[in-house]
Length: 94
Image 1 (cartoon, rainbow, N blue to C red):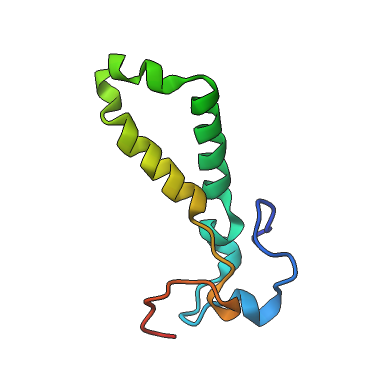
Image 2 (cartoon, rainbow, N blue to C red):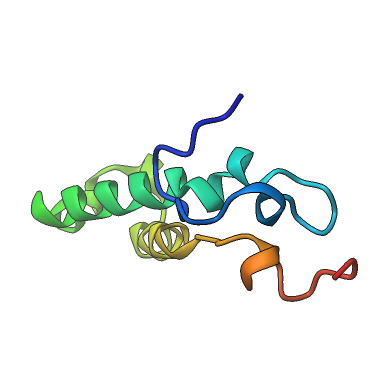
């Protein structure tokens, strides 16, 4: 099945990996932190390369400032599963 190899909490097992709605946390990018990890790496690389200095030269980039905000948001997008205090705080099922 799924391996939790890119984050998550290895101490959380069994029923705690099943959300209130039935979703399996081990299959979720927020629990595995796969998007969070890659967004963080990309943000660091862009900063290291000082991409903001040349971003305006590429019209297809659009608003680099908005893009950096999205990367920051994606980097923070993590979850420990709703059975252990994570999950959507506005979930109607919980």
